[in-house]
Amino acid sequence: MRLSTDKIIARREDGVGELIFNNPAKRNALSLEMWTGIAEALDAFDTDTNVRTIVLKGAGGTFISGADISQFEERRSSAEKATDYNAITDKAWLALAEAGKPVIAAIEGYCIGGGLAVAMKADIRLAARNAVFGVPAARLGIAYPIDAIRDLVNLVGPSQAKFILLTGQQIDAEKAYRIGLIDELVETGVLNQTVASVTAALKENAPLSMRASKETVDQLARGKIDRDRLAKLAAQCIESADFAEGRRAFMEKRRPRFVGR
Image (cartoon, rainbow, N blue to C red):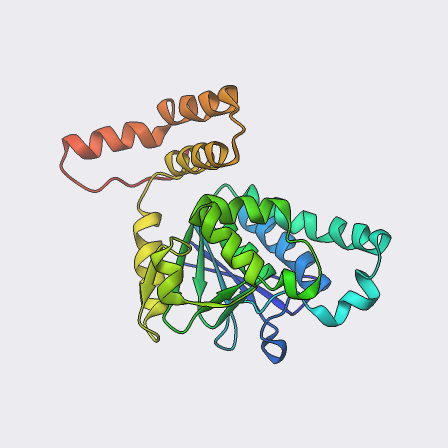
């Protein structure tokens, strides 16, 4: 898949769309060009019926070390410049928030600042023991995005969220797992196998059902319930060929073969 930057790699294999942060020289620090590439890749995956699930991962043994601070002087040094910067990043945040397919963050190495915000947009976070997490906003003099703070509070609770935000300290993967910031903690070196196992399970499930569950949980977590939208998603499931296939497979004692319609 061709994107506007080579710092984001998007590829599809066996039903899995991989979005790879590809700036290892800067530990995958996110530049504005990379934010644009994130939105492009996710939009392409969303319309690709062959993609059942999406995996976010970093090149070079790290996830994302944060935003590319070297661009801040030029791009974020005033409220006016920050508005222009945010207009670009907001497209990526929207694509992450509205991805209709299950999104997995495969985390190793640094997952800091904006990188943690990206990981928290995923539905499932799998991390190796060498992963390190943190939000250095208080040490940079900037405010962490409201939506990212909401996601952090939803995952770890107000007290732990304040500790992470106010101290700016990094925490290891063991603590991240203990407080609920990540869902699975695996030994370094087996992260890819764990991701493959989870994606294999997701690919066997009904896409419309997963989408309905994902959107329902997201709406509940954000405190904004659109009952008409959720009812529509439920009706799509009931009326789908996949639901009929699920019933037949159950009666015939076999695995269902879902197609997403």
